[in-house]
Image 1 (cartoon, rainbow, N blue to C red):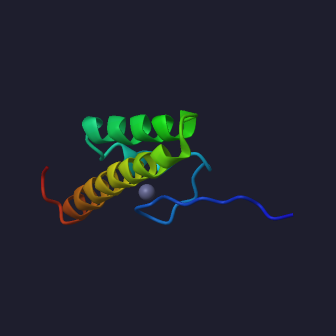
Image 2 (cartoon, helix red, strand yellow):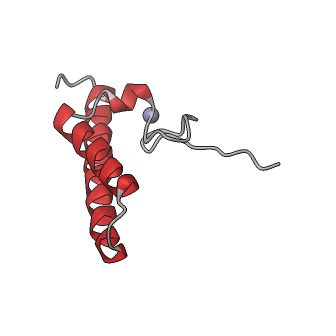
Length: 85
Ligand SMILES: [Zn+2]
């Protein structure tokens, strides 16, 4: 049986299947970007309207997700060098 696995988008830590990143990195994402990811994902998953609108919802989610991952990576790089945020 194949086990579903998922890893953090920033580090390689194993995380729950419904998560984007581990708790440590998720906490590095500014709150507005966290809300954008969760909101866009929910609108995409709950979408029951015309299929033609799906692509736009997916693009919005991916953009929000990429921005959140970039923020966490930047914060992680800063903390690795000992720089204060
Ligand atoms: Zn991580």
